[in-house]
Length: 378
Image 1: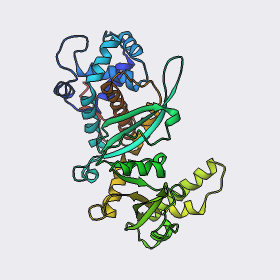
Image 2: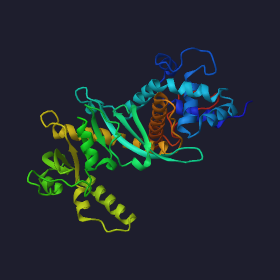
Image 3: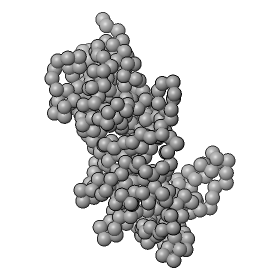
Image 4: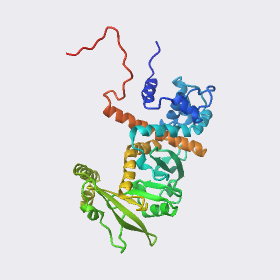
């Protein structure tokens, strides 16, 4: 009897979180074109990609690990070519997996306009130089497709010149990008912005230049009620118009927010700011979307779509910083990014399954009867 391989067992568990027709989907999207050569199945190809992109291994290390596990014998060059052509398939797998986390997908669509989450992470290149780079990427919602990325010197990481933003985008910013120059650059490219507003990080003024107090404006909202107000911010001596949208949270959610603010202050050895405790009762979102088509409720629904994907995005940042970034071709870089997005998503799904399904962490296959064993009630 052959000794059990832990890697094979891990794959069998992971396989249950992937679409049933893995082979057909890979052939349809050009990842596996014929059943000959080194890689003859979609399952083997995906395991190779996971070893490289998700495991933080170089191409050489990944093919060596696959050979040691008796999975497949393949060269690093051949794996690179396979990865380069697998981008569309990996994007489809990601979209299918996102369906399991979000049933109501329509709230993040906007009349055909792409909705994207903008983020970035510092990565260190392999080799003797160990140069630090800044990887910027924009992920589509709701399917988390990673079709845009830029890689630049980390010294320019605060520059807004190379943002992966195009005309017509609806850009959802992480807190890192909540600064005047970045928002101004997004608007200059004729894109719109939707940004969660945190206390004390992005000052706003009214039409007369007076500082706005969002908590005071929203103080009359009832639980679950949304409101909106005109707001402006200054950049290079010019004022830019936005809208401040707000929602009052439930008493329980507000209490959790205050606890979190106090915990954060303790971790920094600081006293919690009264403003942070006031803001815990609300959700504030800034947007440049027009009010005639983008009501406050719809803007807040977009923020909810981003919030739903937040655990996946957080895990993704850790995965992106954990290994080398391929820069040989644009197609290989996008496929590498998509493979890590898919990995972060599968990790989140497995964690949720472990929390909610069973003590063993995955759903059961169909039952089998063992001869001589019967279960009886009392």
